[in-house]
Image 1 (cartoon, rainbow, N blue to C red):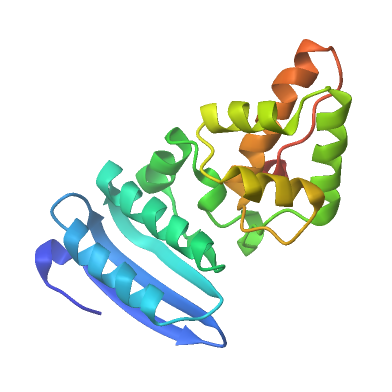
Image 2 (image 1 turned 90 degrees about the horizontal axis):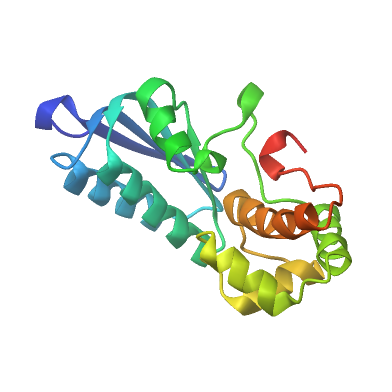
Length: 195
């Protein structure tokens, strides 16, 4: 573990393609620079997946969330998985309020992964049923906070390997569901609903 700053500590460990960053203390604007360094070191360690264990955090504010979202985007760009493990109390609530609970480890200790091709096919069928063009879907998805490029969304809808995580997948589903609802059709389940 590193660091005395206000009891904030980090530790990086890796094995079998997985890098784990364990964080203890309070993650806020004062400890953010140290967390940023630790995240950079964890990303540089390589591996197919990064796990950030926040079970030792007693507090996290929006600046800490911003750092984790930034590293999430970096992992997506690098084709790596990211999961935040052990969030509870105020730390979990910060993710939930921000609509980013999809970054958290799922129930029963299972990390949620990107949706399967079958889920994407269902989304594509529902998009076509709602008579929603890909361009209109992308505009709606982007307005909801989507961050993927149009080409990534098209690739995702085709069922190609995709860097979209569960949060981005759920934003696409939400955009389709808005149109399905307007047409009185059944809605798609969100990936976070345990699909």
